[in-house]
Structures are given as structure tokens and as C-alpha cells.
Image (cartoon, rainbow, N blue to C red; front, side, top):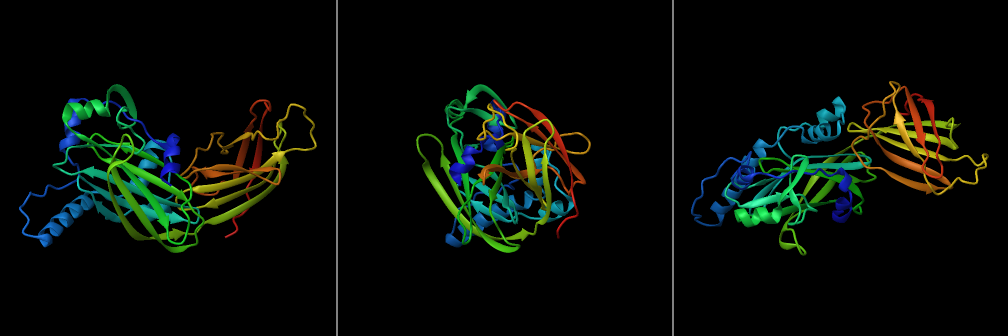
Length: 362
């Protein structure tokens, strides 16, 4: 999954240059971590106690509804009240203690289509590190809070402050299943906290699954330097989907696209869709390229485009038809849905088709 997540750069956030005051705040402050006085260890027991105190202090400060907040803040995605209830937590799911930082898993939830995990990495109070998003290299500009300014690279910041650059990678494995594709986005804030959201596409059954998280902290650059790895296993509840299927079998006016079927699956966290359509074989056009998929966007009854929800999408060919799947920013089944097609070269035409949705098959 590591490489698949790195490829999903369109879901990642960029950052901007930090001035010297911000740099020192990142290096010397662990926001949310209660200071633990340094003591001379009397043995292994005392060392373990100190580690636990540090982890618990961080965990106590990181709670709430991080996944919902992140999607709302950066993508305008609205999660349903049911989803909000399932996501809200008084304390994090788990914590991993690295030598110079603490990784806290705030939320881990799933439905029948995907696993969703949020995590935050915090530098420890006395550490001298610069956290960076996983694909970032030392020659890249400093990144923080969603914009970028190329005035100083990570390498320049390290040389000026004596800090060490650290990145964190997370992989997920559901017991008994192969690791699938997915999506991810991350953000580094001014307090030096690295927030991460991951989605992994699985075909799951309602109930409880066991998820193993593999975390690695390393120094970016040539290869992976000084890696530190940890693994934990945790139970995750899988929410049931409610499905609605609409047989369309209609041509989008003004185009050569015949829509065969739309399937909607409602999750507490998002609305999944799968639309099957093909070029109408009855209409001859020497310029038409059957291998080029048309772009279909989804419009609500208010005339506004419906943005993507919480998840990734794909397009595949099946029996000569295109099968497009993804998510929509909808909390419930709409009464009607408009499909707007935009053809790409050489298939340049436009059109809209309204579809009335029948009652759900629960």
C-alpha cells in the first residue's frame, strides 16, 4: 500500500515556508504533549512507566472527530449524523511510541467498501526533528498548512537549525485479506503535528475485523535511513451498506452515451456509486473512439455539481461497457440525480439526463 498511497498525490496537501520563529516552535514544542520531567532510570520498570506516561499524556489530548474535521476543512465533505456518532471518540484507538515522536491513531472505522484511519504524529518535547509528509525529500520546500513558498527547503532548515528530518509511513493489513489500493492526504501544522488520513478499498462483511498497522519512521533522502518500525493490531467494526439500484437504459440527450444502470450504496461515512454506460452502437460516427471513456459528472436537483465524498474511484471496461465507481458527497439517497456528460476529443458533445431514484432495497 505504501507505493499506492504515494501515487495518490492529488489527495495530498501542500505547505509553505516557515520563518525562523515557526521553525523553532516546530522543533522545541510538542503541542498536546504534557511535559514529563527527565529522571534517571532505576531500571527497566521505571523506563516502561515513563514511556507509558508520555503516550497517555499525548493520547489524552488528541480525541474528538478528526476524520470528519479533516474532510470538512479541506474538501467540504459532510458526513452524516450517524457517521459523526460512529466517528466521535473520547479517547484515541491506540498510540505508538517512537524514540523522538509519538504516533496516535485517533480513529479506525470501516464499512463494506473501505477502511478509514486517522493518525497524528507529534514530536516529543526535547526532540530536534522536522516532520514531513511521506513523499517529501530534503530538497523540497518546507510544507505547512496547505500552501507553499519555496524560500527554504528542508535541507536548508536542517543545516540552519541542526534538526533531523523525519517522515512516517503507515501500512494497513486486514487479517486474511490482501492489501488493496487506496488514497491518503496529510497536513503538517504550525505546532509540528503531522495529521494523516488513509482510506483503503476492501470488500468487507459487517461485523468485527482485525487490522494490523505497520508504522515506520525514517529519514528521507537516498533510500530509507535509520528506520524505526512498530506494529499493532486492533479490532475495527464494519458498518453495513444500504443499496439502491436504478435500471436506466436511456440515452443522454445530445450525446452518444447510453446509461444502463446506477447503483448507490449508502454508508454512514459516504455515498458510493457505480454507473454502467456504453457508447450507443446504433449511432454511427467515424470519429468516435470507443476506448476513450466520457466524463460524467453528477448534479443535484438544485443544479449544483455533487463533489466527491470520502473515498477513491475507478473506471473499468466490462463486456464493452464502462463501469465507473466512486463516492459522492451525499448523506442520503437523493430523489433524483442528473448525469452530465462531457465528451473528450474526438468525442466532443455535451448533454444531461435526469434519473428518478426508486425506494432503497434494504
